[in-house]
Length: 137
Image (tube, rainbow, N blue to C red; front, side, top):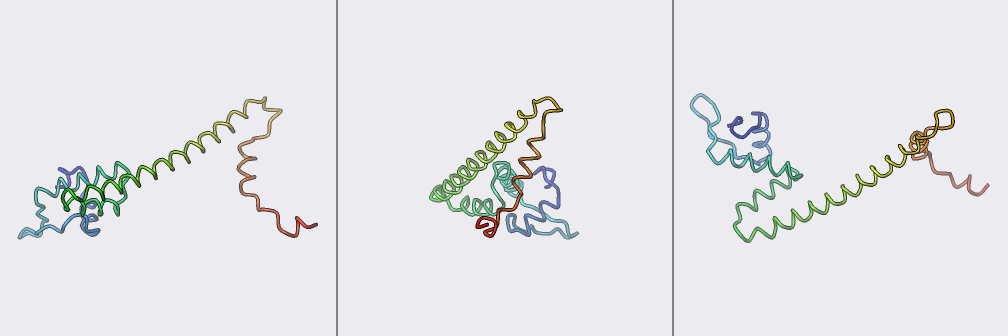
């Protein structure tokens, strides 16, 4: 089963503990006997993870998948929230990229004339704010 679903056995056991995968019947020798639809379910979980859904999201998606066509609105709401989250994360990453690119560009000065702006910027970001006593003196 693990090979068919392209995961390891520990992943299957973890999904069982999380309730994402029903606990399978056991053979007389104690081996887990997964039904054929278990492979499809594990592949669904892995694909949803690739799309950025958390296991909590996936649990909800699996419940909605069992709910019929009316559950499409619920799935859409979850996917829309994920798109919004991704847009925010992309904007944050873009701002980080812009800032680092700008800092790296300042390193173009001759070595003797420069002080590392990257280290200066990082140090300034962690400096404690001035105290109220400093502001009134």
